[in-house]
Image (spheres, rainbow, N blue to C red):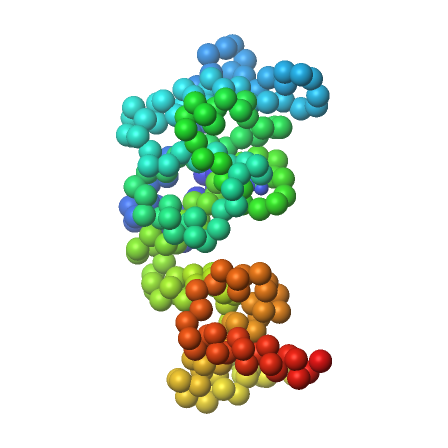
Length: 237
Ligand code: ADE
């Protein structure tokens, strides 16, 4: 699953061009028993299985020996701190990150302490394993690595890069099924376009994710726009 997720698109190309190096480790290769078991019954009883600590510890040990000590070891789990764009930015400047994926009901909790892992969650829902979460983390980090996304402006202007939602985008035709592109975008007035985009991003954020505005890094212009939008909304009510 992980290899398929890394094979195509922006990430696949970045790996091909040597901008990223992603190694996938199969935990079964680090087992010693005949059945190559990576999980076992939970102490205390209850449903499901728990990932054994030994294969994970051995895998991390081998990574340390073969590829050097990682700058971060991250356990993917719903119990972790929330993975955000800010976390992606932090991790994008690290040289070497090890991502540990659990399956089944979870990992033996001693692994976290043993390998000094931080724990990250990609959202408040439960996936059947950490692999998809790891792919999400790899993708979000990788596009911040210089050269991975061809036009760096599109990364800088991304939604969340400044803590706001993105403004709406349009391409041709200028009218489609009765829906027209906002006039200002066809006007050729760069300054008006810039102001419209900024204001629309703030309005969307206020309407859809108001809590983001508590921590967004707004400049003076954006703060003024936010006040203006709030007043407009009060008038409409
Ligand atoms: N593994 C299972 N669910 C997860 C989640 N929401 N985030 C990270 N890893 C997970």
